[in-house]
Image (cartoon, rainbow, N blue to C red; front, side, top):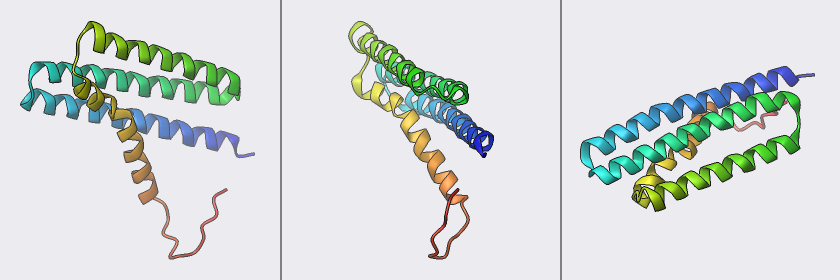
Length: 136
């Protein structure tokens, strides 16, 4: 069976997405600090921290729970992660009075990291010259 290779491949993707999230988070925060008011800087930074923490949690759950193959546990842990993330977003918007646009910009780091990883991975695939490529 090819199970270990598939798990290692997923782990490599998770680690790459986490690294890209860190780089994009630093880039977004530096850009916000250079040219935006303090409230936007704080909002982008808070969103970046949440996004990087979310990427870390996804990698942790993905790598560790892929070995157990327990779909129910994965679903429950992802739902709990979303609940905590939602509560932290609520705290940021209501209690800390952060800017919603800046927070959304910071939170967009993880989806952007996934897209960047997909493009990098897709561009490294062999050229098919119009032939159908069979995976697996």
